[in-house]
Amino acid sequence: MMYKPPDFEYIKFGKVTLDGGTRTYQTPDGNLPSVTTILGATGDKTFLDAWRKRIGNTQADKESKQATGLGSLMHLHLENYILGVPRPSGNNLVRKMAEHMADEIINRGLVNVQEIWAIEQPLWFPGLYAGTADLVMIHNQTLCIGDYKTTKKPKKDEWVTDYKLQLVAYALAHNEVYDTNIKKGVIFMASRETQYQEWIVDGLEFDKHTEIWYDRLDTFYGSR
Image (cartoon, rainbow, N blue to C red; front, side, top):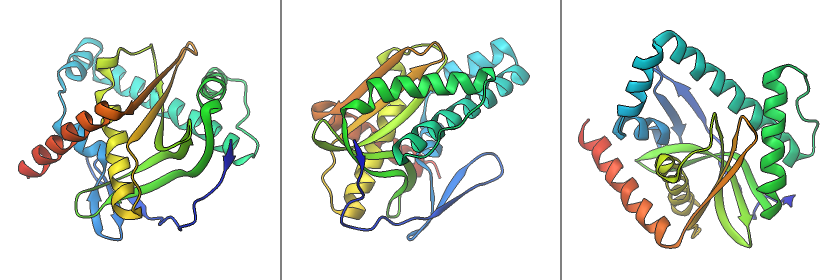
């Protein structure tokens, strides 16, 4: 695996988080909502609401903050690994957990990646949405989008629909702006017990989730 940017130049742009947690990207096409904002606004919140009710808002906020911190640290491990620079150090529980989770993704997921075109790359679909792809990569000889995920416990397939939609959204944006034909995405997931899971979204499944994503976009913009 090697870090090998493509012949064209990727465009960088920033993002801001508004009051209420809504994330907006400042794209060359103007300010656009993030993919995660759209998914959050159009998804089924029944499970999340029940979880908050069961453990209380204070504990839910605490666990959400911990999960975000762990995810950010694992992402940094993986980014530094790809760039060939020292990975984060430290021996506290969270730091060791992030290290071990990243190792699982490196040893079981990234071994199938031949090239990395971009890391943490902002992407946008003009006039509709934007987001940040963890990876644009060649995976098993195919150009695709890669996404890292952490989880407290292993997930069932039906629980990762929104993660698959993220991949599709980023692929469509990349195709629109950079004139590519990406029709594949890979989710690399590690649990806190360092159990590895992987989902490949391609073929008919990619097409199915493309239709679902378009429906979610219609719902989002139809409600505004």
